[in-house]
Image (cartoon, rainbow, N blue to C red; front, side):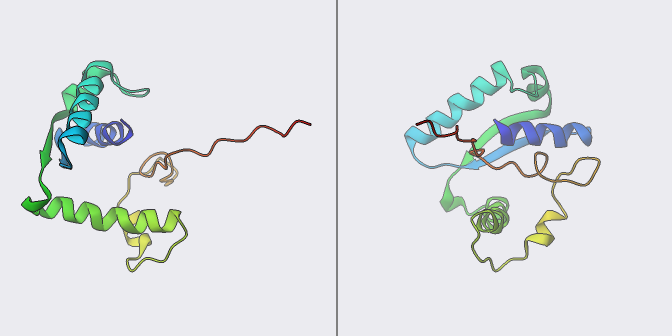
Length: 129
């Protein structure tokens, strides 16, 4: 939901529409993704109503890994250094180059706008004795 929501924000800011293209996995996972997409189109998200999502995002398209689509390969190349930084691991690609292209708020912050980390850390309750 968050990915589609952020994509919708970006499309609206540019008065545009687009398609979500994802890599197909297996029949069960693909079906779950299709159901999640249908639910999103009917229910919307916390920040985007269904009508807004339907207006901006034309469709969800699943492509096989064997199709070797350049866009999906680029997406993998971008996501990997972001995940490695969050996990405190070394990356061969400079994350700063990628950060320059991310969606930002009016203060230039990417967290919560172009970068959403899940699961969000949950504060633990104080120990009781």
